[in-house]
Image (cartoon, rainbow, N blue to C red; front, top):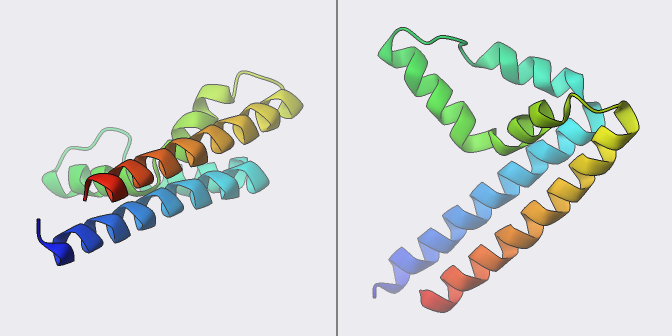
Length: 106
């Protein structure tokens, strides 16, 4: 296996997992504010290829935090924040496990 390819893959995974967790943490802190910015950046019903590409990039880069938060909106404020913390902890643990597995394989 090519060492450069493996190192770049690990750096991409590290970047990806860090970006997901950071945006999730920002949603935990600011709540509806970051969700409004996310909803403003994506198209509800994309018609053109450009709109579909923009939606894919947004959901791929920072989609886990808004997805989890939108699923938790039915709960009251305290429970929603508590469940978001637990989801972020689980996400970080899973991210570390996936990174270590890739690090071991590559």
